[in-house]
Image 1 (cartoon, helix red, strand yellow):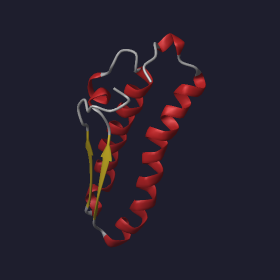
Image 2 (cartoon, rainbow, N blue to C red):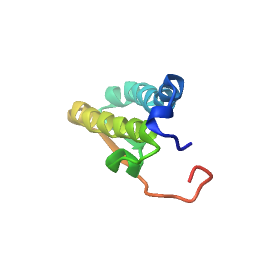
Image 3 (cartoon, rainbow, N blue to C red):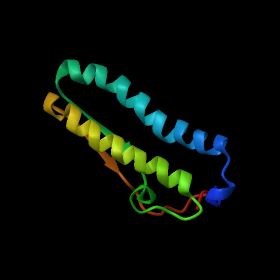
Image 4 (cartoon, helix red, strand yellow):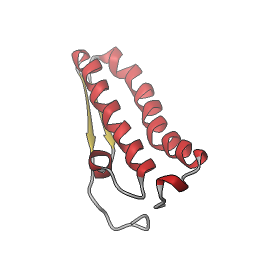
Length: 99
């Protein structure tokens, strides 16, 4: 939902991060347990072009998707030496109800 930054409630901000960032965190942690043991695996996270360039009236969404990109980059460096690849895709605009 598009909303001016000054109109966002703390609950809306926290919900966006709970779903978009914490969800990725928990999935990666769970998947990595077995991947590290096997010294191989691939994780593909999903962000958005707005995580790369930002979007007005969607600051909370853009910030959460940017956090996913940062998490992915840092995690790739951390687990790469263990034979695990971590990447992120950032699709552009897709015709959905959200758009």
